[in-house]
Image (cartoon, rainbow, N blue to C red; front, side, top):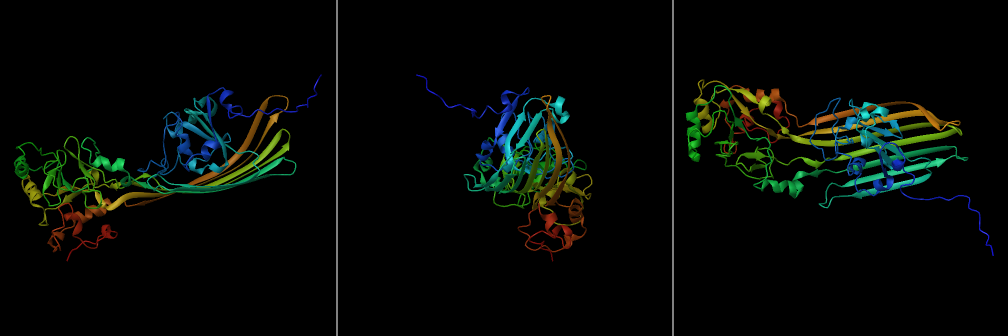
Length: 494
């Protein structure tokens, strides 16, 4: 007996790899689909890419120290870096088309790509410069957006670290619809996301190094120091000053920089000899002694850990695209996107060492600690001016508030040639990236030097001399100078 069977018109085989180009492309391609993006706890797309072995983290939320802004440097952007060859050596595309660059290096800020509209990310992991040009030397990262999306999709995500900080929140909405005969599609998307900072002081693996005798932290000593490349103090005077520490004559060289303890005595930070200030104190910023530790070789290093290890960010983006099939072989499209990204960067303290030193300080009767007076008096020219190095940590950290606004409008045609298995595309695009960087906490070298060079200020009567440590004596007793407009408390001089 023969059993009749229903006719099968179509068989659809589903699978995560069948429709991907990984197995059919001539160049090696790795695909990340939207599921991996949705399952990520991070709001940054670059954090998902950086988990792949072919990517080396470049500009991410954890690069928080850069504050220099120029046509070639944009603090706070997120970029991708294939094979570690640099963010400007891999090409970033959206639907196979070039995206709006973030600065003159032509890198693309991944934050400006609407993550809600991403269907998958295809990465050509081998060099592709023969096809795309020299900026694809390391490869190509192509963000494929959702096609023929119909319906409404809303996503709300929030979370924080296990320590209860670094909260990240994101809201996105995507709306799409087709026309009656299915020849056209329009898609609109809006997204908002925000990330709170994470401070180094709030992580044990940062603060623990301050108490580990085997860990070296380096860092510039912030409290005041005296060093002379010419007209140096005599070796006899140096031996006299350090004799109270039981140091043999000639141990401390004349070329060293001598820093000041809280009580005004002098110490040598290269060996730690004579230092009597606090060790591993992390609760005070501004007196020059926060974050000092003894290095494994006995020298002193300093890291106040006052910066962030994850930068805060707020992003707003809008996206729209319309597609219309003019014929079976010809399609027109119009696409526009806008994004506004704000990122705060926190760097170190304002330097006042090396070429930022306060030179030309006169010997005019102003208050000078006894040890320093001994060294200055032993010089061949005892009345000559001298140089003090001092980190201006009382001004706080250098900070940059960076806002990047970018838009791109694109329109074009694409189609196929019926007689051949060829496709073609032509489009025009225009866009603009605007970067506004507001620097805060940067000191004025000219005003700092004017302060310490000011004549006759040593004749003023200084109130409450006891807490005025030697590393502050050139900074506290002055009035009416612009450097103090944001200094609290104000200098105490009468």
